Image 1 (cartoon, rainbow, N blue to C red):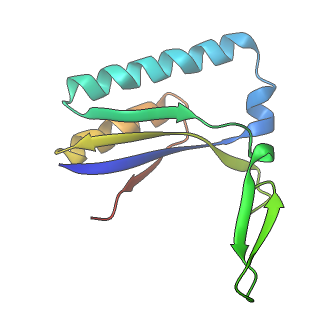
Image 2 (image 1 turned 180 degrees about the vertical axis):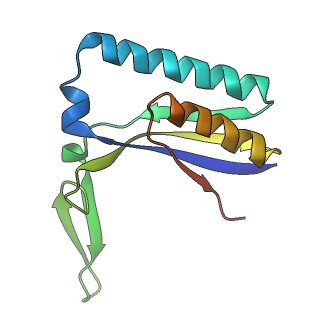
Length: 116
C-alpha cells in the first residue's frame, strides 16, 4: 500500500467570509469524499483542518548555524493550505478519481504521493 497526502489549498479570507450555507455545503462535500474513500477501499489515516496561516511559525536556516524564526507562513499568497487528508491505498487511480469528483464539487485539491 502507498500513502497519499491530499492538501486543501484555499483563499482563507474568502472562505471566512462565506455564508453558513456555503460552509454546510462544504461539509457535505467532505462527507461524500469520506464515503468515496470507504467505497473505494481506501484507508483514511488522518484528516484535519489547520489553524489560519496567520498562526503559523516559519523557520529557515540563517546561514550561521542557527535559524530565523518568523510569525506567519513562508509566503504571502492568496491561497494557503487549510487542511489535509493522509490516505493509504493500493489503488492510486481510484483514489485520484475520488479526488477529481471532490474537486468537481468545488474543492481545491492537491494530490501528492508520499515518497517511499
